[in-house]
Image (cartoon, rainbow, N blue to C red; front, side):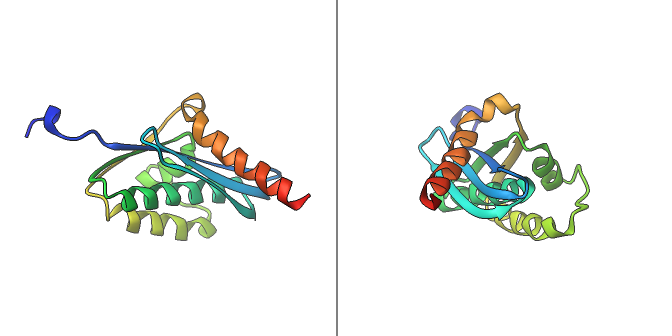
Length: 139
């Protein structure tokens, strides 16, 4: 099978948001193939929200059954920690990394890529929409 014969990877974008850091937080996951996840997660830090977004993207990839997956995000910290390029200094984030590695092991071919913020607009919008809905529900 040549490269051209292989199916295109499932591409997912994720983002996390926290207003106040810590404060009301959420994440969004977007795929051009139609996956849209937008969830408020209570009060936490932006880093936790980013990790939760990454886990949601991995879970969506596993649920899709895709053999080839590319996950893109503007969170340099999460991407580089997952790839082992940054050390995990914040011990409270280690369980997220461990769960991400467990989920990643369920995907035959996974690529995780850092992208510029402007390439991640849809996931960012989904994360912020979840915060807006949560705020409206609390009013």
